[in-house]
Length: 386
Ligand code: KIV
Ligand code: ZN
Image (cartoon, rainbow, N blue to C red; front, side, top):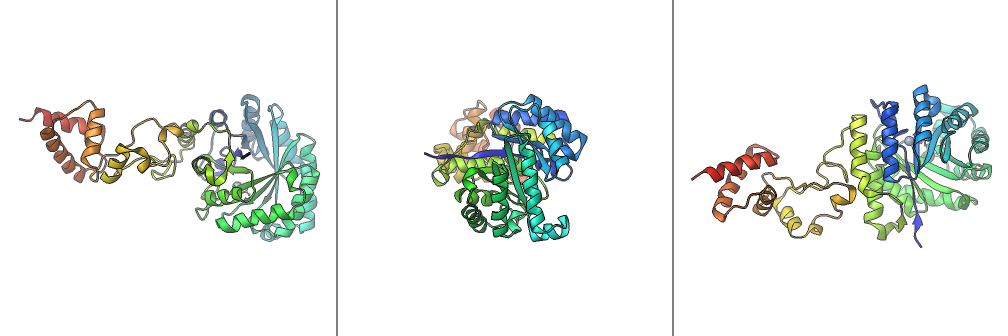
């Protein structure tokens, strides 16, 4: 029987940490409601101690959004945890996500704490969080640059203290896929009580490897994925959730994992997040970019028109795109041109079609993307000519 992967969305927390992004309460609620329609398992709604606005947003999401577990972030101290618990009080199911850094570089320069003190602080934090909810996630910040033996010690202690999810982030996006997979496996093998918790991964995209690293971790025993819609987040962002989801779905034979995601809500979710955050989606972005299902060259268009699977490994309809995305440009062929005209209601005889196609090619040399309006003008002109 295949295992189920937990989809943890942090668009409203880590995603909102994107430079220049600030969502108001209404916008956060709208995104959270859409994430619930998408069917994510956990919504990390914010960092309640960070600001009164963040607190209100987490509280409102906890009060109004039903379905997913609602999660609030807290550093490993009582004040943060109390604030998160208060914000989450009305949630159907609340998760407190507490974290502390474990890498030598962070412990020395940022925390100025010895490893044993970090371990003790983590245990106290998990126990305290557990007094508010049974659902507690513990993260070792900058885990990938931490000592594996120390991580195994701190995770063993955190699970004993009551953590139900153990998150192993690549906070600075430093890992490569093979390394990260082996790292996750070593931690699972070196933590004797890890079977009592869900192993989670949280990858940043500094080297453009966040999705690849996430998938590698899943092949090595992780069962929770953290990421953001459109891959937004600190610096180069987080693992892009729509990419992870569609990789797991399209290559199920490789990963063998189930999810309870309504894929047809992916495109709408991406558009909503982009519109509200003002972060544009690059046209060639996998899954949700404008060109993700577009075919420009004549050979590709001809292939897709004959049989979609020639050049499409997924249907746009799967993710909720229902328009025809064949782009007509200078590389397009006659077949695609004729099909588009048909869709626009024109059936031309061979002679007219040849002439219209010649005009279209001349226009495409001057103008990169030919729109339906251009085609209508061009064909009407041709039809009126003697
Ligand atoms: O990147 C990171 O390590 C984080 C933690 C708070 C989980 O965002
Ligand atoms: Zn992060």
